[in-house]
Image (cartoon, one colour):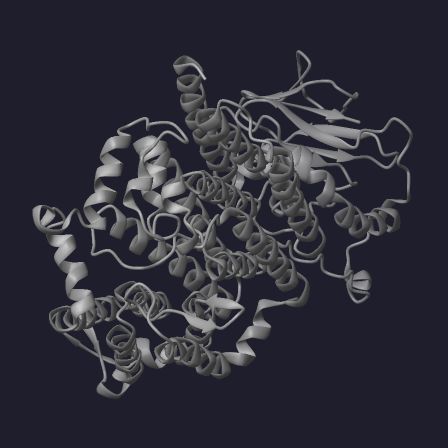
Length: 466
Length: 170
């Protein structure tokens, strides 16, 4: 009697492809911004805005095309990232549209209404998203371009130095007649590719060749080279471009990836020491950064002399929102004024009109998106994919932290955009590209292993019961 | 717009936003907690996609070993209908299925009343499925009767081992 037990029937169930879940969530993610849009119109004019059909169809069409392309080119990808990105992008469009209705912040000098442009940029971003899904068949191809990515990132980071400063920070490349792009947004993706490729090769040297001292593993002097180089580069950006946020983003990204690659706590401590030391020195010398830090430490100083600072106005708008918010279209964030209200300070409008509960929901959406990225890194089978996924996820996490922390007064305010939510073409394109790469890695990671081909050699060796 | 409508819309929108977050978390939940739970939970849906390659592999063996005697109306799967493993199914492809607390059993019973090698279910030469008690302490019951000899299992008849009930289904 054969006693061969067949246990495969119990153990081998691969991850199902969750495309239908994604579709349901996407319908949800398109419906919520449409509801918000109607809500804004009802609150401002007492009627449903005329553009609701076109707007809803536009967002729906983008989501549908993206979904079909994911179904076709990355069928096992994570089901949550696309809906969350769509929802955040849609909410961002609603908030920009809502601020466009305020004449005070939609003057000619500030560039007029921004929502139509943002919708165009979103369409372009989805096109880039699809392009990456179609053309990037395997994320490991990026590994070949490790050092090229490093060079490109360096160029992108340094280029804005040669262009005039906008709002006190040199973050922009201005092409006359075409517009301006923010290369830093793209640099974060390219830097993540570079770090992932570099650390994958060098991580053993960085992790193992170290001395134990005071309970920590300290790296050898010559292995300190890369972290010091990146630190110097970050500080250079901080000094030349006067931007604390990007410095924190790039250097933080490197330290996070270094820690993930080597599992050595000493790198984190070392990185934090370097970062805080550098920031302190620059904070004491650079005028622009000094003002920001001053506003952070005491946002309400100098109101009597020269009016409230933006940091104070943002805090007031959070306060006026309370727990449940004033309702869409009924806040007073127009009083913040300036261009920043639609981009850097858009969270203030979210906080005022949706209240603490709405802001928490939005932050949770970012949290979920980042969690899916980290989950992708855990599930990925190749070290490069792991490092790249955690790098991209932590780049987004750091950016959300820098912006949300800055706006809520936890850290000094910096000029960075909230991914997907804030007005800004480069930002929305770069973040959709980031999600596309994460989806590609996630597809590779979650795809069930192909069934082993039946081997002809196995046949003669089996026990045949007669 | 009346104040009331706007208040309702404001709270409604927040509710919908949170609903999305909660639904998203529910989707994540299936990924978070190990693989064992998802296997049993999603077996009915996911199993359908997974099974064909296995059958392709198994079928030639079964045919070679004991000829293709799969008759019409023969059971195709074994289903656990009561007990801690409720919902687990095992495809019947001509292999012997062992039941017990031993780790190498096909179905590992987590049941205080089961012996380590409790029973086995196997097809005889005609493809009729037979259940045999392997000298267990508390016995194996087919319907209400305790088994003493290997007995053919009719379709849908409950086989009771401790708190676990399994049956063969088409």
